Image (tube, rainbow, N blue to C red; front, side, top):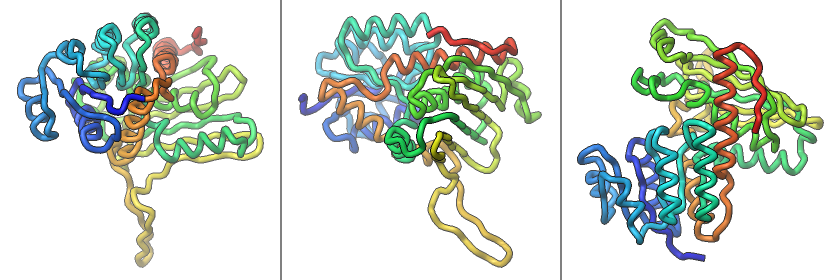
Length: 337
C-alpha cells in the first residue's frame, strides 16, 4: 500500500474547488500538490486559499510532473477524453467527473488506454456514495425486498442553469438524468435493455432551451435485461427546493430513498406544520462528494478497482445517448452495449 497519494485537481469551478478542499484537508492518505485552471489568476488564488505549493494554468504540468500520482479532472466534458488519455499515458490515476466522455467512440478509446496503462479510473457518480443510497444498496443486496422488479427515480431542481451552460450541457438526459441511469443500474444490479424518453418545456422563461433541442422536464421509461422496469422523472422546474428520491420495489417489499428534509425537525404552529427543505445539490450531497474521493484514494492506495469504473461511466453514457435519441425521434431505443 502506498502511504500518500499526491494529487492535482484540474478545473477549479465550484465542484473542482470542493474536491480540492476535501483532498487538502479531509481525505486521509491524500495530499494536494497542485491545482490547475486556465482562467488567469484562478489557480493562483485557490493555491493561496488552500495552502497548495504549486499551481498552473496548463494541465500538461500535472501530467508531466513525476511527483503527481493522481489527477482529479473537473474540466468541461469536451476535454475529458483527451485529459484521461494523457493522464493514463503518463501513469497517473484518474478521477473524472461525469460524464466519462462526449460519445461512445471516445469512451471506448479512453477505456482501451486505461487498460493498456493499468491505471485506476473512477467516474464521479456521487449518489453511489451517499449514505442513504449506500444503505439501500446493502438492504437490496441482502434480499430484504426480494427480487427487484421496479425502479423509480426523481430528480427535480429549481435552479435553472443559464443559457450558456444549457448550450454545452448535452441536454437534460445527459446532464441530469445520467445520475439516475447510473444509480438505477447500481441498485437493480442490472443493465438497461431499452429506453423510451419524452420531454417538454413547461415554463415560458425556459423557451430558450428549444434553441438547443433541450427541455426543462423529461421522462424516461426503462426496461432492464432481467425484465424489470422503471421510470425516471427529470425536472429543472422545482421552485420548492432540490428534490432527489429513489425507490425500488421487489417481490417481498419496497425501499424508498431520499428526503426533502434538511434537518429532522418539524415546526408546529396554529393551523400550520412545516419543516425546512434542501435547496441545492451542495447541501444534499456534501457527504457523498467527500466519501467518493475517500473511496478513490483508497482504491489507488490499495491497487483496487473503484466502485464506479470507466466501464460503468460508459454504460451510463450509453443510456443517456439512447434517451436523447428516443426523445428526438419518439421511438423506443434498444441499447447495444
